[in-house]
Length: 452
Image (cartoon, rainbow, N blue to C red; front, side, top):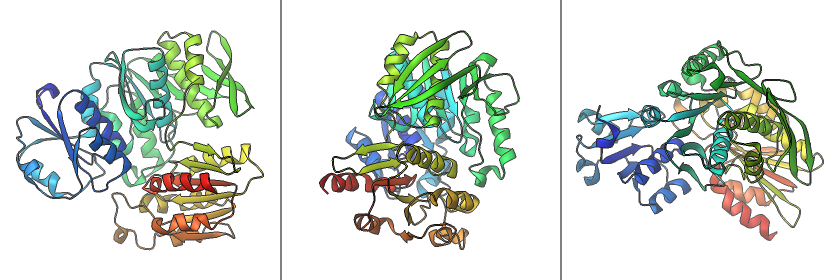
């Protein structure tokens, strides 16, 4: 394979994915010609096009593709795409075609790479590490799996000494990386279409952990067995690095942070949830090990605005509250619901949930049902198929899942009908949740609640 610097054209197959788009932005910012395909036109693809990146939405071999030469073009694809004429075209003509994770690994080989892995929490943690690096003015670049509310992007370049990225377990992609520092937030069962069972996914995380050269630069949430020496972190229990004394005052969360050598009191931020304090704990641990002082870290934590679609909360003058979240696994939904019930125990909660993947819906149906039963009323959208086909999952539908949910007020809806149904409901808090295209409800819902 050629050195990345020798390529002038970069074609992304599945460019609208959150991880793919960060890479596309990186090469575009480097002065390369970037183009690509995605099957769905979203707010993110529209933003990429406004930045000067050419995107098509039909699987057609057009003149723009046939004009590319294999000598100076690198094709990057996401393993979520299984079959595509455009991808076949590049493969049969012997273009260099690489997975996203392989390219990300190549980019970060010459940096001090901070990789955040875990079935839950990696987006918040990697975004927070990036934010702290930015506030400390460290020379770093980041490739994130969500849109930072501080950066308004999933990519930022502030130098090249460090790189911060999500280590994606899907398709074992994280094993392509060369992490110098790493975090493992959780190893719950997920992506069983790839791993088959919980033991196999845990073995994948152990293989990832083995890539980190120094024991003291591997941070693992306390309680996870990872098969090698490491530093632990936790909330409300003693670990190498831990936070405790959590309390809420005027919509702000306060906590104390402990290192092996000292205690720093009264960190404060606006991001709710014990799980988010856990993410903050390991982010602070890493930056402390990089030599950043606690005065800088306190200021940085205080002005962290979070990630778009990670518990994005709006409180309106009419008393309504709207929360939008990316959660698509029962553990994640439980975390969101627990935060809402902790801070607003008496308020009537309407949940609109879009299941993501037939396989995940099938594998975790009972967990989803238990989580969703904590709502007062549920609108369950049709399953977002992503890379899967309904014909391969006979009987796995939202109606099938709804039967398992223990609620009196519940119904299935298409995405197209959901907004009209929401407007008919009586609620104090609206939660829209899911990882598909449910985000298209966000703008109209915000505008409507503002006016009622």
